[in-house]
Length: 222
Image 1 (spheres, rainbow, N blue to C red):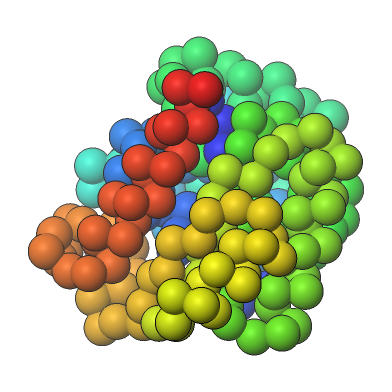
Image 2: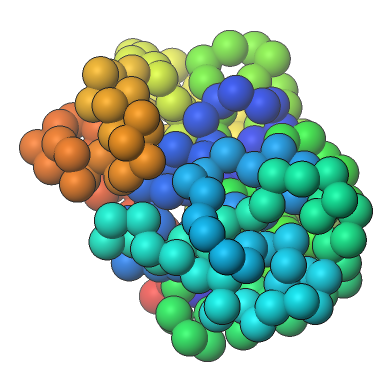
């Protein structure tokens, strides 16, 4: 199963959700942001090298704690050399090896996002409780549906909202909402480059990510 973690607006916490969801699903996490990578870096080949044909996909895989990660490079030259046309083949290759893949998509609605949504089996929309972020999430939803990829779940990040507000957002974005509150545990884990579960297994955030993973696992079984 391939899951794309997306949301049109930058700064809503997609990378944090992608890393933590990947940890819960025991999936390979792929940093798909070719221009502004945000997940922990590794040594050796990365996604830029793989897409440029300089490395095999599995050569780029690293461990982040207990989680497997295919990081992306951070150089302009690497981004320019990357051939987006290889992306689908690369993702299918690592899916065969790991079974589950979580892609941390870039912000916006450029062609690289469209490619990543197209190869996915389901999308997790990440947003915050602001009108701008939800509007961007709605545009991303429409983009995903144009690619015939369903919305598996919505993450309302850094938020604690009423049941009525949650239902309103579910109606707007067309999928069940999992709220993930702001917390020191998320900040601490991000500073260490680790999933929250590894640093704070009993935190509320860990429980919410478990719920998100269960929701996505149900999509896989359908």
